[in-house]
Length: 214
Ligand code: SAM
Image 1 (tube, rainbow, N blue to C red):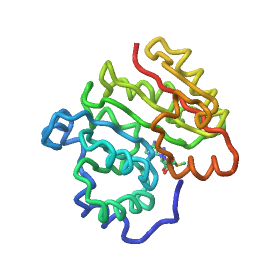
Image 2 (tube, rainbow, N blue to C red; image 1 turned 90 degrees about the vertical axis):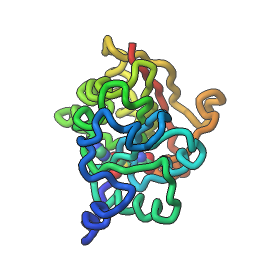
Image 3 (spheres, protein in one colour; image 1 turned 90 degrees about the horizontal axis):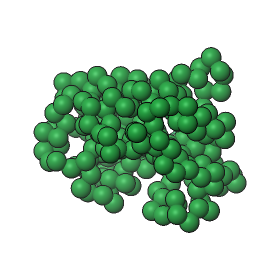
Image 4 (spheres, protein in one colour; image 1 turned 120 degrees about the vertical axis):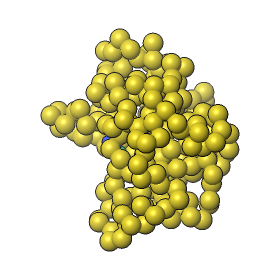
């Protein structure tokens, strides 16, 4: 998702109480920042952030950080948070490849990846958020007991992601389905994202996997 450039978006984001402008200064201090010991969960590539805000309302004892690299997209999430005023949600406008500059090992308990950009060309495989290069970055911030949950309707990206995990000696494939909405076990408590609603309403199956470190 890349909306057209919105004049003033950067200013709004830099001045929003929900966006953290120099997140690397909080490396190792995120629990102090939230002023509690609650687990920290990230959504990477959160788009307009509805999934994250729905989760945060349902789970007030979890701290959520939404990550989105484009200001034009993040602006929509900030506008929604201005209405909701949730104290367990913050946003970072960064590229996820820098996560290890922002979080210490073990600071993050869960990472959500929802409908990540497919980058269909082979030469762009390392940009996919489930590539082994990104999995390596996640392993530098995620706790040993932590996990990644990934949803997509893109079968090529899903198969690529299964291969990256199965080929890795660091990640275990805990569960997966090629049809989440008809999987009685994995669909329990599912919160739909904006893309999930859009693509499932067109008849696309939604795939989901859960992976954790060995
Ligand atoms: N997760 C939302 C959903 O399911 O409705 C939005 C999905 S949208 C297709 C993917 C989003 O991920 C885009 O807004 C894009 O800007 C963001 N994104 C892609 N690569 C990223 C990266 N390396 N770091 C941060 N955000 C990224």
